[in-house]
Amino acid sequence: MLELANRRIVLGVTGGIAAYKSAELIRRLSALGAEVRVVMTAAAQEFITPLTLQALSGNPVYTSLLDPAAEAAMGHIELARWGDLLLVAPASADFLARLAHGHGNDLLTTLCLAARCPLAVAPAMNQAMWAAAANQDNVQKLKQRGVHLLGPAEGEQACGDIGPGRMLEPEELARRVSELFPSQRLSGRRVVITAGPTREAIDPVRYISNHSSGKMGFALAAAARDAGAQVTLISGPVHLATPDRVTRVDVVSAREMYEAALARVQQTDIFIATAAVADYRVKNSQTHKIKKQDNKGQPPVLELEENPDIVAAVAASDPHPFTVGFAAETREVEHYARQKIQRKGLDLVVANDVSQSHIGFNSDHNAVTAIWADGETQLAEASKTQIARDLIVLIGEHYQRRQKPNGA
Ligand code: C5P
Image (cartoon, rainbow, N blue to C red):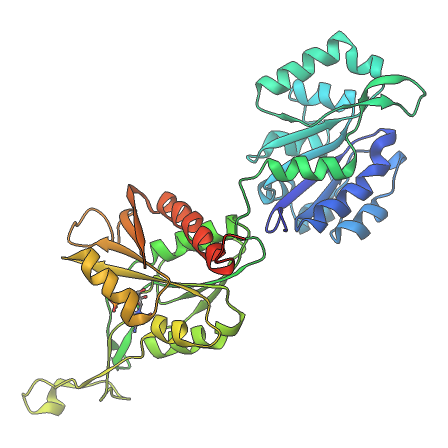
């Protein structure tokens, strides 16, 4: 399993003999799915070259705070924001001291001050330096500040001493790093989500649509990405920013959404339909704007025809992904939701009562019941972000159960 899929790690390398192990560490982190960008201090470059770490990480290595060319490509504040984790390995005694005292006198310490993501350090130094009172004070200070301390290990040191101070081995470090992140339940899975409303043209300037904001689908896309999935979001017209590291496909009408979904169905492991798709489109839509005077005082008559049911078509395809639908109802919510499982061939349906105006459509909150063939569970009112995270855990469990029906 790719425990670090979709994770971005800024790896700081400081000056110490263990710096040569950073090369192997980059390989281990990348093998677990992480994208790594490396920052080296001046002392680190005395032990290993930036070129080596650039080749292994596949990204330029950052070495200087005051480098106009590097700042133009990705500024230090941008780099600090890019990472999901800032890992310093090896972390020398001097670096820990500068970190503990809030220095910003080189690129790496500046990044540590600017980063909003968690910070982890893997100390590496001589055992006497590790035990020194000043170093231990610094380490305590960092721990109290919430910095994750990975190691050091005990054993024989490069200088011949024996004791605590060795950097953890790259394999162990990569495992410990993956444990800092929440579980990657959907690691490597391809998830396609439909979101938002569709627009059905009456003429080039008018359309039929609905109030869907797309918020639930966008929140699910971010939650699925955080669970390690490769996410494609097929979205109708909405005013929402695309979640980072999610592929977005913009569509307007139900038929366009249908085409986009069906084109991907064979490469989809989990399909989640949150879109409020217009049930009907205008059969006699006009290529030119309808003029009042054209109708001799009579209002025009719109003739409607049915749109394809996207989620039902996805569920009916062979092979078909694990398929999740939504059921927005104003009454007899559970009854209609169960009917929808049957009628559309769904694996799971997420039902919400849209008769309550403060949740559901256009709101930042929701309360839902997830229903499947032989069970259900309620998710109490919470932000759509939280509901999305809980739903992704639930969907992941049911998806895995379908893969291994006997719990094998
Ligand atoms: O039938 P109803 O519109 O209530 O079903 C809602 C569910 O079906 C949602 O998951 C919605 O995204 C999906 N749907 C669809 N294509 C349609 C109509 C609804 O995918 N044409």
